[in-house]
Image (cartoon, rainbow, N blue to C red):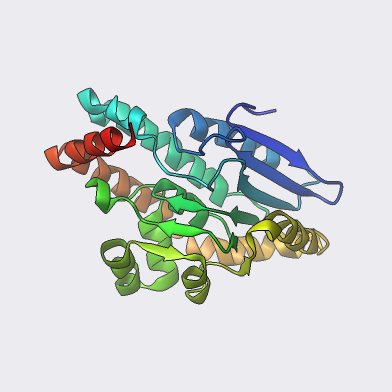
Length: 258
């Protein structure tokens, strides 16, 4: 099992594989270690001949809260090297997720914030609990995005709407995300796991070859330019990380949380 403290894998006889982030009761965040654990878990799934569908979920109180700001603060002395390594690991996990040959269903409850928003959008299909919130978070910290958020939003919603979300509203509730087509199914909070399982099982019953072909044809078309955009996001993020504004905002957030 891949890095059990950070992610776990489980599977059903019909080929539905579930990747669960976080230790139960603890927040799900993006770190270099969690990104590497996800890469390893995804490699395991890719090697499973019986896998038909992958579900990405969290055991924490929310889907994913984004970057671990305590870890990010520790990179201030050499952000290009240290923060760059975190972004590289995160981006490698995003690419691994997008390159899965089987459909990936994100099961979202609570906040998907910052990198967590990016991670949710890296899934092919999203099922959201009514309490789900998709939060940009980056501008509030004085930085631009990573994890492909700029790519997925602009591809799915167009440039103007994507810019309005990241610079204007800053967040979408579950109903708003569904109205925009980012979420395919909205369910009551307590029904999220059951509804996700039923949805995944329905796809798993389809003939596997055409499912994989449609994943490649539709998902592959959306992914044109993703790798190059991830590089641009990293460069932009690291430029922001050098500003006094970013560092002050990270410090202020950590002090407020203490």
